[in-house]
Image (cartoon, rainbow, N blue to C red):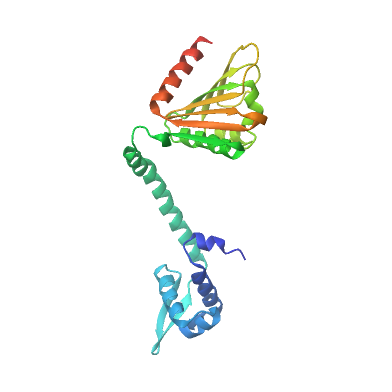
Length: 246
């Protein structure tokens, strides 16, 4: 029986152990519960109070003693639903209120606005950052400069990137440097007919950020992400101007 999900509901290992013991016992005294769970009586009593406050355990007097019984397991499902509702409300509040307020505390620019990533793990993080950032915007779209040599390496750590982008209804416009590139849903592509050798490079413009990905020696991917509205706007103007001339 996999009980990990109960920990995600906020129940400790001790609380889970005592709930399971009480579920098997039916109605029981603190002494019997403590014996069954192999936990001392004082700790058992405090844990039962915590479980009662969460609505997982109930109690009633029996003579001079207090006896406890476990609520039906369906109560755990209700607890999960309450957690989900609270989490959804919390996420919405973070999006609309907390995150904007926290961002106002940041200085306009500091060394932390430029971040470096490397290897497949780093590139996967950058690609996820593009999707997560654009998804939160009203106009779900971003622009890309991409050369031919980078394409076979770019999505290696995140092979379902395009499917994820489409599922989130994110549009992309690509100016491809050199031939090739695949057509996909919610994407537009134009080409620059470049002559001679072209280095592997990829620039994603997703305000307020710009991500630049290239290959070091032995096809080792490296990336720089600049979090700057001014730089992103300048890159956006360059892209729009070139896009309209192609």
